[in-house]
Length: 78
Image (tube, rainbow, N blue to C red):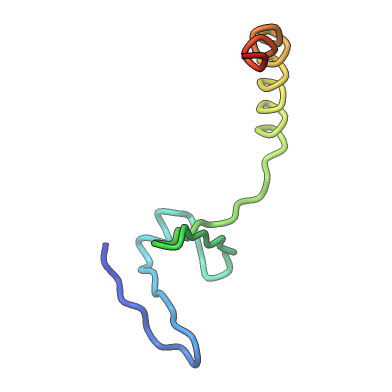
């Protein structure tokens, strides 16, 4: 999808079509995060943190650390 920036006071705005917002479950009130690498930018909706997913992720990290600790230690010594 190609879009053009539009002048908005002393700034520029990027208008997002309704079907795109619906696809991403976004509205005008959805906060967004903007990241750049200096060549392009990425606009992402900010989603609330899901405690269940966070807990599951931390459990998985702890499981990997517990099961592979000796391997990680030997790799770190190389």
